[in-house]
Image (tube, rainbow, N blue to C red; front, side, top):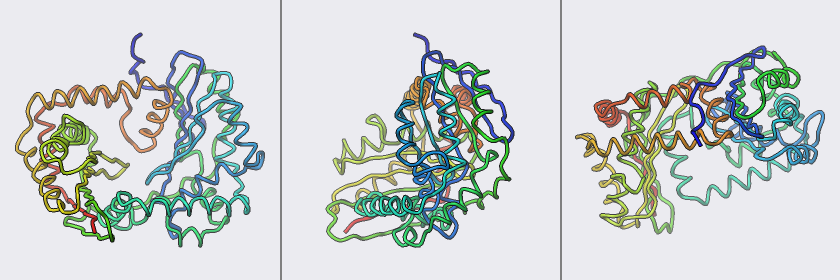
Length: 404
């Protein structure tokens, strides 16, 4: 069987709403609805966007909480949501003949959620319990504090908020957030599947409003990033945990070249950092490497752990491995990293739900389409990969460590 087409999805508008249609033969259609609002928009109420996401499932003018879940169960599966720094995503995968009803349910959640007082109280307890659970995770604690210190106010609080901020929050605050930000002009629909385009257009027109107020202002651009070291302590930890953040340019081609370099240096079993920490030195089990990207920011995130008495050695090993890569990468390493990245893109394209979300998220965050990204990857040469890594090594960098 051939791989799915790498052609760009068709783009059309329904008033202020953007729809990206990606035909995939078969009985199912996946829908990814992306709202360009996240925790950066919380303002005086840390955790507000995340709490709003929870309340989308707690009742609308047409359906109560139980009816929403029953209707979703009748229509299909994969009905869920997620909140990030810059966006909120809802997704649904259903049979082709049920797309109109699925869109109607999503539109109900997005535009007609009522935030009932009793459901708000219940859901607030759920989120507070989630926050308390995250507090127990030293890796989560370190990452949150490192991001806050590196970016300042832009990412100065956890996406979930804090126990204190959740206790101060009210249903009225969530309703105001919905009215201010949940407008078609801030939304993108990605649709991948077997529904014919004409039926999709008619279904969107019946379910979604064309316009409903203007989108609010974008949050200010994050600061450049802070260079230095951050030392955190927590009693009785048997391990030392490290995270290294480095700011990188918003240029998409350079980010893609950096992703190739990150695959050479990072956390896969054949990568340099994994081989140094896990295989040669036997320092620890967890090694991570990622490129996190937003509409006006991007950062590499390296993470690792070791026994607490090996903390200094862990810090030195990560820094040495990064600096050694800046002196040059082997052609075979770059070739292998290219292939791994192409493989991940190919796997993404095999899933209609992943494709729908990727199309919508990329458009909402101002990133190139998936096919354009794949085409660019094929043109990136080793010199660009090495230059991108060296540029990152000169960028603002924060190394944070948590141990006892």
